[in-house]
Length: 297
Image (tube, rainbow, N blue to C red; front, side):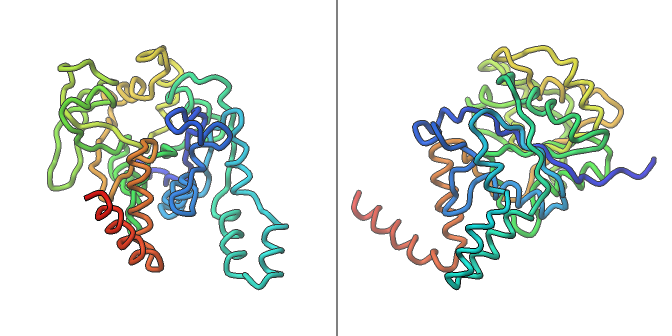
């Protein structure tokens, strides 16, 4: 088998309206909501960069220019910080503008996740690529979640998706997969999948969540995919075509802590979890939590 290309490019769909966080997201992209003091999307891109990705294609919508601005060079801000003697913060701002090559592509109509990914076809080209959802965080500093999927692709040539077991009764909220799970490696050779199954019809409780590494053959499947659940072009429907291909599709139980920052409680949990990782904040945050719990008891 010919040597497989290393995954160097990633797609981050960010064209959604963020309705679950209104009114905060009326004028601010949900991807820019901070986890402590770092925009959610910066944490996602940092994960990609630590996994060796050099180019990120942001699928943007109207009113999302703040994402591009955040990763642009802010000369006036950096100069002002240096003039005030805060070179450390100025250096941090400069690193944000140089951490990755950013390409912005407009999704002109909200036609689903599959359509959003397809919008990146020309920017990605004929090579394997990653997809990271902008409101899903995977906390694993030494071994980035998307890098774990990239290793599976490098070893097998197959597509790889992050999976987790969801509580009973929640299957209808996800794309659900079934197959042969190797408990020792945390890998499942996927045999079946369905997008948001009706109650009582799911083939398992293993759900696809937030991270994908896909071969370039996915483009043809996405282009041929018709609108499915919700009248949208679903990425899961295109992934189903990989299941029956020679290379196949693997589900991977990624090592790390996943935070659903697109959910209000998940977002609050992520803020607390990331604050507790900060030595300068940990003790004060724990004390604050104790105070709040005591006040409610």
